[in-house]
View (spheres, rainbow, N blue to C red):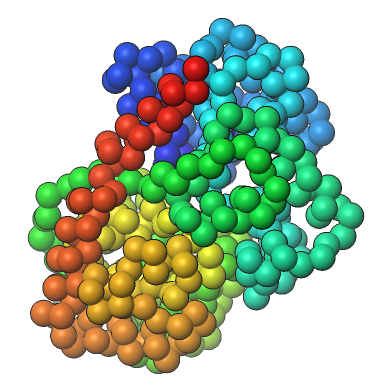
Amino acid sequence: MGGPATFIPKFAEYLVKQGHEVTVLSLSDDKQKSPKSDIWATQFISRKIILPLRVILVAIRIAMLASKSDFVFANGLHQEVAISTLFVKRPGLAKIVGDPVWERYRNSSGEGNLSIEDFSDAGHTLLIRLQREFLRWSLNRFDLVTAPGEGLIQLIKKWHVTTPTLLIENGTRCTSEVSTKVIYDSISISRLVPWKNLEIFVQSASQGDFRIAICGEGPEKAKLMMLTKSLRANVDFLGELDSTGVKKALQSSKSFVNLSSYEGLSFSLIEAMMEGKACIVSDIKGNTDVIKDGLNGIVVALGSTAELTGAIRECVDNSEYAAQLGKTARQMAQSDYCEEKQLNKMMISLLGLE
């Protein structure tokens, strides 16, 4: 049920290949791509329906589907799934990749510097407390909650979620190395939202005279494009790419950058590792759980344009060092983050709820 288009189609296809029948229920609008396939059934509910009515309609639809199913997997729509269990209860697994209450707060309030950890510890208005309580109640209606990072597991427990939790890291397709023409000094792939700190990437491109690429869409795009123009930085905005486009874009860059204030475990980071890129990441737990400075990437202080500029420069000027970092990163990705292995862990966890 629900979830971004990157994971749900992969998991649905994997389940079908293992002999299971799958129906995906997703919200749909004109801007966001919705998952669909010829090998599994898809049902859509319009995101444009006013929120209270939409929640009710989605919960009813989930209950109808659950009545004909053995299991429910939620990669989103957690509250709606929880409401549906009041009518039809089936073994359920919830995948959590972040804090939706924090994301809504940051998007609506403009509090760009408030970290996910600080938000979790802070006192809040009645409205935010109600949102947190609704999420807590919803997750406690499931039989198992999974998350891609240990830091996120600990946060979920701080929300007073008593459902058992399990760490299942993200995975990406294991690929063979392909050489291609290098165009960019560095690249970043993400949703264009405040906590990705992409303005620092643009500033670094200006300071270091780098050519960089930013892949993705989101509310920060116009702001980033204006900053690029004002700094006369050499930045290509590639928009939202499919998996093939992401692979080609990564192959065309000397390094990959992730400057997030928060990550569970970044899909794009694992994809960059799989492509053998030198990965430059901010020093937050979700990144440093994977990247060890000087071994399989470079870790820079969160918010430091100077450190980022120095790291990109090192990868540009010392191609042998960058290649060694990328080689070690690729070996780790192949060992620990191959997509099929992670999808199998998720399937076993779901089917084990009987």
